[in-house]
Length: 359
Image (cartoon, rainbow, N blue to C red; front, top):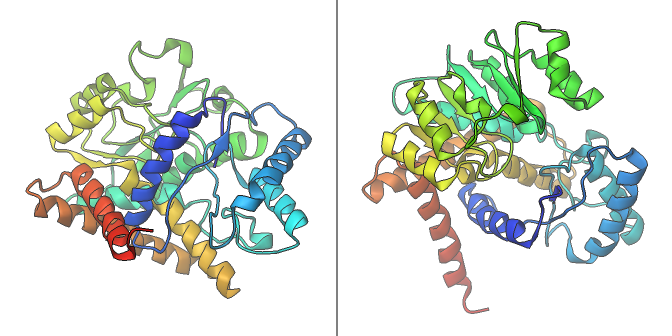
């Protein structure tokens, strides 16, 4: 579910279509859909956001359920918004059930759910590089965004010995060659919820590029030098010109943490250059996979450890990579994970529809 001023029927349609095949790739028993509103939580008080979420759920509750549709958070929908919507659902129905994912650990949430999409995108990049005898260790990584996906992609990159050197929000981008100060970034974006410009108050050696200074056809993030790129902000944020700049600077891997962040021109450039390129429906499926793990815990009234969920996430991402990679080989384009992921996801959905008959 997405709350953002740009939300309209067209965006929801294409995201919903993509979500079906992404979810199919996970190998888990989940369908796919998308929803949201053009409400902007940014700059609103908690009370305003609560009232909107309650009104929204008052209309939505009859269409969702633990075995019907189970919303999770996307842009503009974090733990706060999920909490307000879950509270209203419980108030209306009188039922406590796993009807939303991304919940607080206090009332049915899963460990690793917050980290899952970012962690998963990094695991996927590591599997792509491993297949070519390489790894993320020692690599400088460009990341866009400063939300959950970006922050926890950075955290996992540090775990694997890589160095994330950039991040961005709706006002501008930060480039810090020594490596992004993750604790400061978490404070700015998860606690204080202020502009990234505040980063410079602590790290004067970092570079800040306001959005007004971005290249005419692209994003400032992708014009810096990096070995790998993780677009983790929003759709169509990486243009064809950006892709050419990344390739010219020696980028060897792109793993999409956001939904469809690369334009078609950028995708074509990555495929032609034969670099490691993980499309969003494969690389960022860790979030929805962990949503399903949260649903499983809710249904069985269990609570798994961080390590248990993380291991399951790693296994799911490995399975997604293997499936997409093997399908690309089967269809004569080894390494083309766009083709591999598209065909593998579509085939699973089509086969299920055929087997269930004309209903």
